[in-house]
Length: 337
Image 1 (cartoon, rainbow, N blue to C red):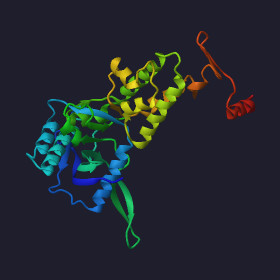
Image 2 (image 1 turned 45 degrees about the vertical axis):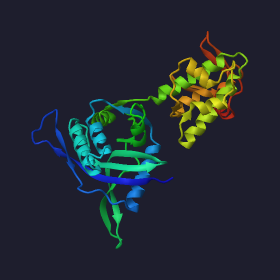
Image 3 (image 1 turned 90 degrees about the horizontal axis):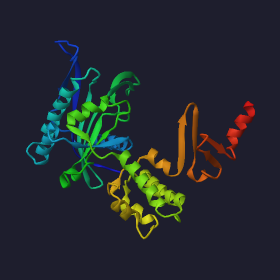
Image 4 (image 1 turned 90 degrees about the vertical axis):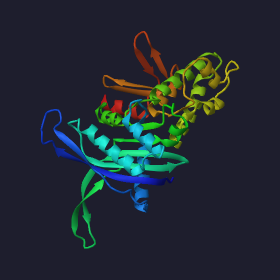
């Protein structure tokens, strides 16, 4: 996998004490701006390839620009060649610094701004990376302190699909950003800086797909529900592994026709509001072939095909009977009795 880096620049956001200290703005984030683009060297290409690969593997959400977005206005000016890439990046760094100064938990870092091409698609990648302290052994085998960019654990980043944005401004998926795991605070200021809001919701789309598959199977009593769900899971898992999206038309072609109706036609006629292609969500897809749950000290997971077979659910008494325990669990129970 390779990418073509077109333009790239780094700026530094530095944290300083506010001389007019107040509880609301205890810090000032000042931008230290680079005055020229980076030369596209093998080191720059390697850095961006590593950032691209790391970003590909992170949990992301989709966003769209709000009408009043200042950043979107600057982006459009650059796309219309009303200003150059360097000026655009400098204005964006200042904009982010202003936004960060409003938060007491803000930290400084290196602001990365890069346009690159991957699989015939142009992207704008923006990230704020932390610096880490470490030790360097020089040619004389002396130890020197050094600083390096942490390019694997960043959580403040977004990527704009420039090709899709220019071809379809009404799209709800041209912007992706890393979805924070600790509430909204960390990602909020970055979304405010972009002037963006959440667009396509992959988890909701996956849940809608699962409901559509279940309803599709229920319309025909002769349908082998578990077999169909296995087919769906196999296709979706393959797309997830390949880093591709779930194409409803492709999925439909691999599923049987029920009541003389394909799955794609069924979803359209029933108005499920599924996008033509959906980013797969691993945890949502698991429910196609497994039942699982945890709580009150118990975690339980089993293949869906075992229900009413080796796993008997007594709904009235709120209990489950398992016939044929896993050998390792049986051994633990025998040792503990």
